Amino acid sequence: PPVKPPNAGKLGGYAPFCENMDAVFNSLKTSMIEAELVGKAVLSVNMGVSAYSSIIEAEEGDEEVQFQYELSKFSGEEAVKILKNSGEMVDDYYDWLVNYPIVGLEDAFEKKDASSIIALKEKIESEIER
Image 1 (cartoon, one colour):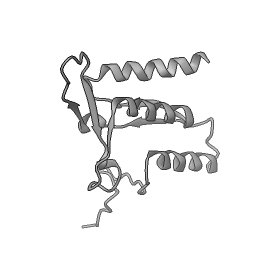
Image 2 (cartoon, rainbow, N blue to C red; image 1 turned 120 degrees about the vertical axis):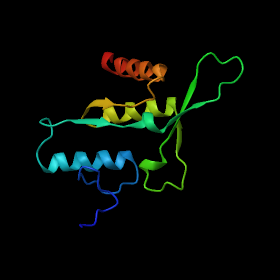
Image 3 (cartoon, helix red, strand yellow; image 1 turned 30 degrees about the vertical axis):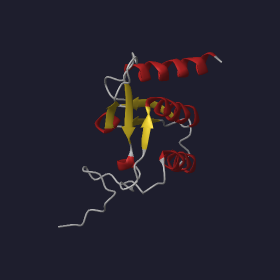
Image 4 (cartoon, rainbow, N blue to C red; image 1 turned 90 degrees about the vertical axis):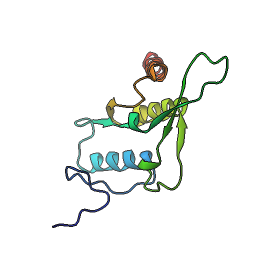
């Protein structure tokens, strides 16, 4: 049987290893420029992070549950823990939406992390109003 490279998807998709998500999006943006697709093509991203989230133990008096996202699986170096809180995820997504031709962002947060979904929406809306 053929040998499957470690960075090939279950359905045969292939992705080169990149240092971080900005490197991924820069690579896609460069490819779009070279293929003369700027303004003709956009990206929709399924982050799939709900499978990699956890609830941070609430401290006494905290009214809001805090979520933590463990993203080591996406780095290529799973031995190095990459943990981000909801606010860091909001900031990352916002930066990507502003800097790259992304029109869709699916499964960006834990399903119960409604406050982060609202925070990202409000941040995007404030940018649109400027």
